[in-house]
Length: 442
Ligand SMILES: Cc1ncc(COP(=O)(O)O)c(C=O)c1O
Image (cartoon, rainbow, N blue to C red):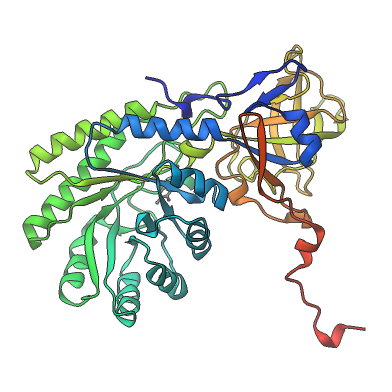
């Protein structure tokens, strides 16, 4: 069965009576006029339909907990939508903890991840009652134990492990291979458990956690990951008499950025995980553990598009034809960071012939700030509205103020209604934290 992450565009995308592209019943040219560009647009219908896919796909295993990896896109509006769909949250910083807390999320359904959590961040997690902390290394075990002791509390933890699985995605987004900066090596788990059992009395171990990478198109590796997690909890039970009853398989499922991408369906991944889990429960003779998953990209990417206004152009003799937009690497770092590819259309010319091959350049002062290389589209003109698809994940969350450009606004669209969920930054926002030392003031 197909799932929403396999769609290139938000599910509500269509051409309306004005001859423009609309999403969530909102004309994209109208949104650009109303809110300005660049503008991130998130389609609530698409977002909720991914949540439904995940819930339906995993419904045959009785103990599944869905968490959304906030790092893909974290703000209070999106957190409220996902909480209303029953999702918990994987967070990686005080900022993400605070955001979901202020959005009214049940903190018991929050898991704190990261390879170098600070004293302050772990303390905040303890104070706000974050449900699980995935401990990444020996240093953190000791630090967290001290913090928990100081609050007279027990920290409920998982151990993040490196399962030794290589997935074929960009090297920057692989995380499960052996020589990775994340988690305990398989050979270090016993030592960590001995420390927890013998010395770290304010830590309670619930299970193991792994995450093998991002934008993954392979399917069988999810089964392999499940087997490693189950085998390890069975071994810990046998060796230490522990009954760890949670496994967290992380996120990683890919999405369709361009027509040539064919990501697997959520239903395929769920079947592979659940079948292997059931087999392993028999094979390793354990009670069925709770299964946690924490997808980010595949939840939020497809529902998001970014609108830009086309400005200047340049035809290089015997070279490319460039059209520049009013955003670029500061609102979407992925193309310049790791050569990510995107698909785009002109929102006010959706049914014109795609006759020209053009390159979409960003406005930032780096030659590498190219959003899309060599894409076929109707010849752009100054003032056209460009819609870049599948920008919901790792766009706003990686955005910067490079060149002192304000971060764009974000709107949530649904049933012909649009609501701001992040305001556009102002020039005053940019200087808000600046100070001129007294001795330099006139
Ligand atoms: C521990 C962990 N969980 C979940 C995710 C989410 O991955 P994705 O957005 O590919 O689903 C990440 C992303 O890097 C991660 O590091």
